[in-house]
Image 1: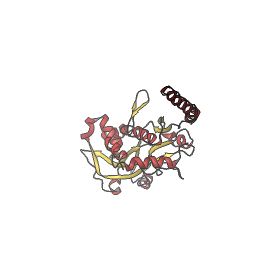
Image 2: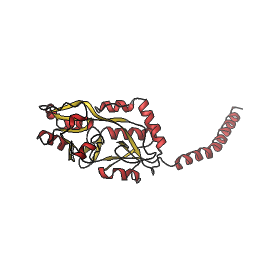
Image 3: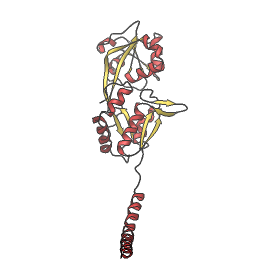
Length: 267
């Protein structure tokens, strides 16, 4: 009798496995055939420096706030980030032409791209006026810059000062690198420079001995909400990226990341 029960149990188990086998195989085949999510292609300009980006020789992106942010967005989307370094002048065409999906730490005030291509605000960019500590320029408003020589980065826009630049009330001095802005000021070839807090922090990280030589205005020159520009040809839709960013912001992840890199106002 026991032998018969054993045979019957084995027969039932074998029948169940035989029925489940095709279903399990079908489920595995469906999972295997499901297309993998595309990588999130994140574009960065080669001109950016720490704390936004850390670039190791020969030209390898190794860290920085924007790399970490791109990795976090990709993880929220369930994929991986692929980071691309491009020339500043090619940033807009790289994203809008579909070679990259996204580029962060930009603003529609800087890149004239209209339409639904901008994400929710991520972090603000704060610009300050820097002068020599031995000859500090007290900055409380635009009138304090009248008659001054102001060093700025080539290609950067300053709408508040554009009329003064054009009329000659304020002299604009362009340089290609942050180091050259500080050099011009140090040599007395400019009265002040205007650049962002992150670029100031990056300069002092590279040249800590220079910190005591310069005075940084307590009052900000400008505060601009930065956003991410999303390609119209990206497989990742703007709504999905906004949802990912919103979750990161609401959890405080972006704020902690900004704080870790010494940046202002992580949301």
